[in-house]
Image (cartoon, rainbow, N blue to C red; front, side):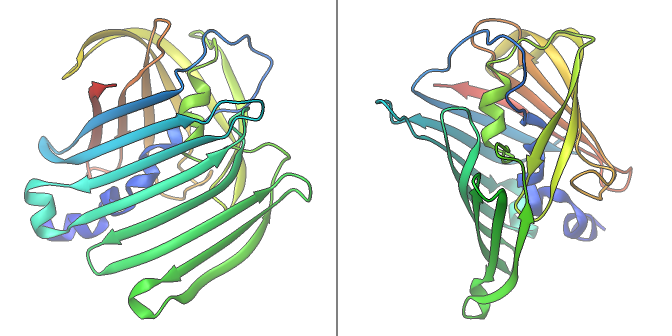
Length: 258
């Protein structure tokens, strides 16, 4: 029964856990600037099991025309890894406004080995998506173009952008998001201030609800929540995905911030 759950569990698509962190350049004032380099380490829990680890990195090249690079590494552990091993890498290049330029994903999930590249072109307002199966001599799985706005956010780069904004409880916004295959407007809603305890410590936070599932960008039914520290650091300290009863809840909590 557990193996059956794992085959349907979104750990094998753990990149879906971070879209809740997306945002876009709206007419809000920016509350703080992010450090030139930052590492965020998360524990991943599923049905009270320690399921894996995630590491998110931001690097800013600086200079007159800075280039931002974001990286995500996800790795399963424990009983989950024994039954369905996952090791995924996601990297994106962003402009100074956190608009996506390119992204690359390498997924190793059980017997599934894929490599995906997406290029976002603001001039022609299109995203070019190419996915290959590395287990089948790099055979093309999907190649397509999608119309996008001049500035659109990938699912990881927006993690950093939302932290620079002042979105208070009761406020919401519609923002442009793309995974390269689809481009949509996503509602982000600030709901309440809450205290959250994590392995890194206890934080005063603002809880956000992000309406990304249920047929918006992803068909899967789910509720997606994000807790951001209510201080100048604006750390994303907790991420929760509540899915159907048969799949359960996935929780990411900040373990270490560097």
